[in-house]
Length: 339
Ligand SMILES: C[S@@+](CC[C@H](N)C(=O)[O-])C[C@H]1O[C@@H](n2cnc3c(N)ncnc32)[C@H](O)[C@@H]1O
Image (cartoon, rainbow, N blue to C red; front, side):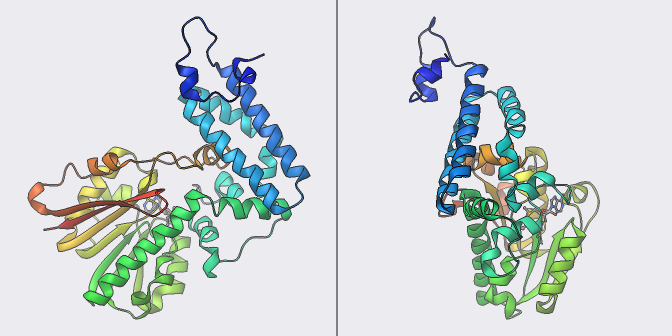
């Protein structure tokens, strides 16, 4: 019998403090716990009498996977991921269109603009894809879980920045980097009132930009196809802006690229202009589930990680640095104002 199964109320910190000579937690123990968790969640989903019971089972799965990920070494976690994906629960959670789209990556990466629309689907911008009752219940859970709730808050945050800028100083120029479907435009009243000068929406994905043009072109928003990684080495000159923002991109960029991009975007601000970039905070509840069943690996950043992105910007150019997280504390915003 494994150490853990004798006393499954021990948390990882207690286990770490076990004196030498007493059996410590091994990969075998973690595999045992994973199997038990996945079996239990699968059985609870199959016997659930309501979508609430399915969601309660998925909630246990989210919490259990996050704990396992936290305790395991990187290498162990990779092995646990492989094991989880060969468990019968994997097929069940893939009945959720949100989970399966991330996993199957029809556009080559998880988190494409169509997936984002599943999260924003409560505002009528997209329809919820067809699936059975189990898939539907899991969809409701995953698209309400912290990562998704954070994404909705992130959009509100950006929409209010736009509304504030448009109301206080009409005619200002805006650049949205990695805009996806630019859904903040749906909830910004100042966008509908055409209060901006130039409003460029930049993304690498032409299909997403088609939607931006069709939906928001009439408000003066201009889609621009470009890859930010190439922009770092090439000579893409889009001019200067009063507000530049990026949501849902930095979570995919390593520190070196994120730092260079931050420096370059800051350079493209006018005096008094603002750069706002968002990133997921570490330790969101979804992380284990996302990595195991969605194959969705993000770069998580803390407050100090965000500050470190500004290192190459000269002190004399910076008027203000602000760091704030959205209400649920899943996403953090770095806001830089140019002198
Ligand atoms: C998670 S979505 C975020 C979309 C939108 N900003 C939002 O918050 O809903 C990420 C977007 O980044 C775009 N993207 C990813 N890598 C990119 C790159 N290197 N250059 C430009 N866009 C990129 C993708 O095409 C996708 O639309």
